[in-house]
Amino acid sequence: MKIDLHCHSRASDGSLTPTELVQRALLQQVRYLALTDHDTTAGLAEAHQAAQGTGLTIVDGVEISTNWRNWEIHIVGLGMEVADGAFQQLLTQQSQWRQQRAELIDQKLQKRGLHGLLDQASRYANGGNIGRSHFARALLAEGVVTTPQQAFDQYLGKGQCAYVRNQWCPLTEAVARINQAGGISVLAHPSKYQLSNKWLRMLTADFAEAGGQAMETIHCQMNRQLQQFLQQLAQEHQLLLSAGSDFHSPGRFIELGRGLHRPTQRGVWHHFNWLPEEP
Ligand code: AMP
Ligand code: MN
Ligand code: MN
Ligand code: MN
Image 1: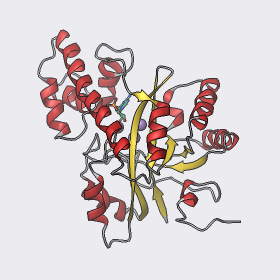
Image 2: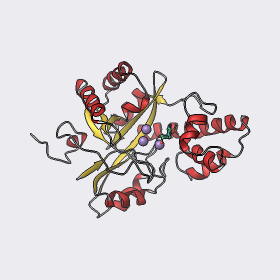
Image 3: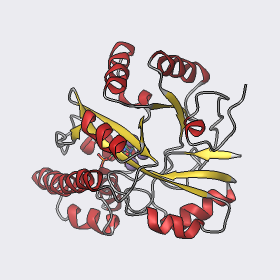
Image 4: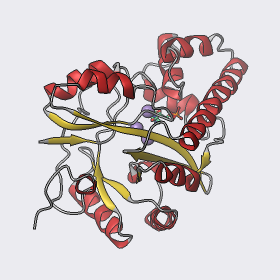
């Protein structure tokens, strides 16, 4: 049985609709799938509808971009009451900042002689939450770069010419809103922030102190040593373990449910009583 607690649809920067994502998850024999779009829950209703009667359970999820000591840290929320007012208010505020930031990114690109990219990025976002990946696709389509990665490396990534300093909510606020809405907060992809071990320890401590409950420690692209290090770190702060592919679109390396082996204990899935606790 496979579990995948982190993925994206077209409601943010994924390339599949929620329905296509559900169909793909079924083909991959995923049993529990959390749809965790960036700062929006707009894809969840369609995902639930598509999963009805299929044996796949959709877990209500979100991935919130936050600010922690001037680092951009992503917090996944799982199992919240989606309609919770304060939670949705935070997502609205975040989505508004996404739109404002898109305009600022566009201004910076225009200064480089690159025009019309906001329109194109907005078309890719198609009413969903706009993100840098949409600009990366626009830059690719215009022939400015040859890969999305190059768009991040030369234009959109931190410190590059079209980078806009983040105004995301504080990490503590995202954790509080998720928890108050009855969900559990998960520190997403801790190894992706390029933090030294010392800073990663500080982040984990602050996250746990803020009420964070789990950490993603399982991913097909993390080697065993890294997974063990993260699991040890999680244990030191009594955090549960989570597993998610962060799937965005079909490709060679990342697949829904792939390589997400589950430790027998302290999994976030035990919190939800999906699986019997093993001795
Ligand atoms: P945003 O949330 O709009 O700031 O965009 C962040 C998203 O862009 C991430 O969730 C990834 O999907 C993608 N992303 C971030 N950094 C890179 C990178 N270096 N290369 C490719 N995609 C990236
Ligand atoms: Mn993304
Ligand atoms: Mn992320
Ligand atoms: Mn993600």
